Image (cartoon, rainbow, N blue to C red; front, side, top):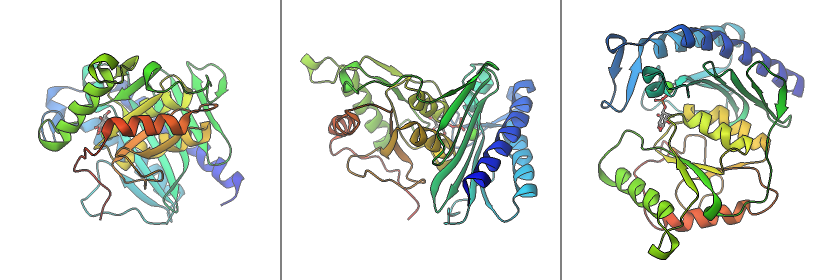
Length: 296
Ligand code: IPD
Ligand code: CA
């Protein structure tokens, strides 16, 4: 696809994300329109489902040959192929959405050959719109203001000690996945005198997509989560890469994880020290492992 064609797709995704975002902003979720999926920490609302149907219809009408993967219509076993594929989370941050906590977004990514190629993330409650096209840079528009190129801040990485790191509890609150979170959170937070990395701060803000966009902006140093899905990261991954950041495996070792890896460490753009940051983070994880992984 040419640069102009990709740019046109991005412009259309922005229109669709804004339309979907209007629906999200005007919705009033209640306990009657909210149901549990796996457990009470993993929820879905009627708005999530309605917005996915809206986005899907807009995208398939305009790009009928492209595949579509959405959180609410996903079926176990569905694989992302090399075809151009829209990967969509109609609402990332559903728990925030039902609580009225304004870190909620519509996330629309296009992957081609499984590579994040176009990304649009829109938070309708804060009027923040992040977007990127492969090879054309990443941008943010905030509060209807001007468009700024990402990163907003760029500096050398100073390692874990001064880092502000996004993490998430996820919805698995027992077993090896919970144990891994407890270990990593504890080791990141603890003082160096007690064997930890003593990071500046940990942030748990309830939307992987927005957190990765903050990393792309340089507003957070990193984001780490094991257990989230391709639709949580596809769009923001493109935005982060275009800003100069990287996504590596959330377990130690793999510098080039696939889009459906389910374990991600996103690291901000930096003039130096990015690789060393990853290695320092991976050393905290050590040999510990979650059960999450890409589709076999
Ligand atoms: C969730 C959010 C959350 C992350 C979960 C995701 P949802 O997506 O991104 O931050 O911790 O892993 O599933 O359910 O709000 O779309
Ligand atoms: Ca979602």
